[in-house]
Image (cartoon, rainbow, N blue to C red; front, side, top):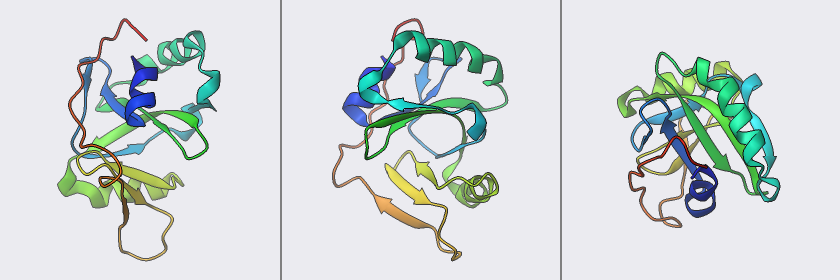
Length: 143
């Protein structure tokens, strides 16, 4: 299932414990050291499930699983916190404090660049090139 979401939508944010997709708010990686990165063409279910098993104990206090493909078709799996949209400023602060390059606005399907030195939140809108997100039921027991 995760591989399919990456292939068809380019990414996902999942409340792993509830088994549901999150489609509103701003997601930011909270533990860069725990990120799993690999070439999408080298997808290995065993490696992904191993990462999920190691990560699952950390999925508490509002932390979730996020995954996305970059422009070079590398897959990034992260522990993410999702902030309500009205708290985007807090998401930006957290991301910058962790040296993250970006956060992601789930409702708008927009990247929020965090490396811009100005106080302005710079958004690269992907909505024109991708369909609007649709909540996706997630089966925790399948890949």
